Image (cartoon, rainbow, N blue to C red; front, side, top):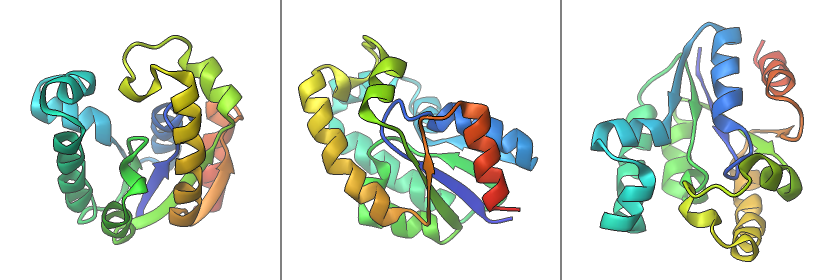
Length: 163
């Protein structure tokens, strides 16, 4: 099986849906943010604070290149990963990209007042980022799925696409 790569804004449900989908499809689950944290031994928020966003993006690029050489996985990408053409290109080598198109209102409900998301500290700026990234997700995606549904329903919808 080729990889199923899930993209979308932070809080769209990429990790929760990805884990559920991997169970349904009987394959491995990879979360790019979790992989980077595991490899670096620190949280992404700490990477941003101590090394900066550019350092984090380089780690992300390298990981996308490595994932592009694998198969049989459901891959949940970080919110910014597929806003970069080289990451899209690397990941498309191994599979198809699904955009979880959740509304900004749903995302705000899911995130709440999270302090663990460096780019969501200012809701106005987060909305601008959401609007800016949405077009990039749509351009990268092979499929777009309603991200406002429950994680289970979303995972079942994606599984149906890849039957």
